[in-house]
Length: 271
Figure 1 (cartoon, rainbow, N blue to C red):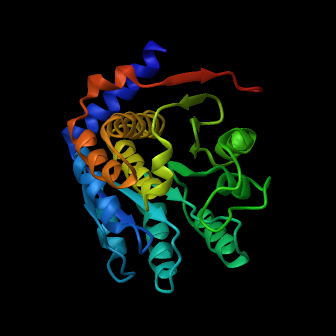
Figure 2: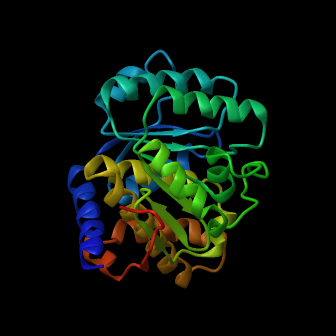
């Protein structure tokens, strides 16, 4: 565990030092949440969502988040960004919002996976199961499953795609197909704040851009959970948690992550 924690601490420290520019293509209802979280954490967001400039923005960004809100004008931007990711090799995170909920959404997300290789895929249990072909999909944008139900799907998806897969839940699950780590902390009020998961996807892109996909994904989830837990201790409900979360992220030092709730799990068939 010492090496694991050192990697998490190092990834947060490197993100803070690098202040990576993160190109975010996201849900219509979450741009401000996403930008606020990235700024509080120490990264620099750019919220470009125009297919005419996405490729140029991707070229100057350190990391990229593709979040499949799939409002009418977004698919063209997502497609352009995916092509840029493939051409540039930039670390990118896919947040497959609502995967499996509708045939259209599933087809668009499958097309993105066919266009580019992602450093990480982050979603709820239902979304990850849908991508892996082991579940029926999300209930709208909400999960119909717990993270435990997606463990096998996440490991298999990580192996098939050669990336890190993170599953949100009461205890988040992060795997690269060979390793599984559970990340505890956070608070149930996060499920009552618009865009909390989207913001975590952006933070994952920032940390992965400054370090590597494995350490970066773990650092983002550990930092978000730790900050949320600290914010919840002072909050009186989802509204105050929303504001205090930004304060706690801004105050979070790399060494604080030594106290993150991390637990390794064995993986069947791992090398």
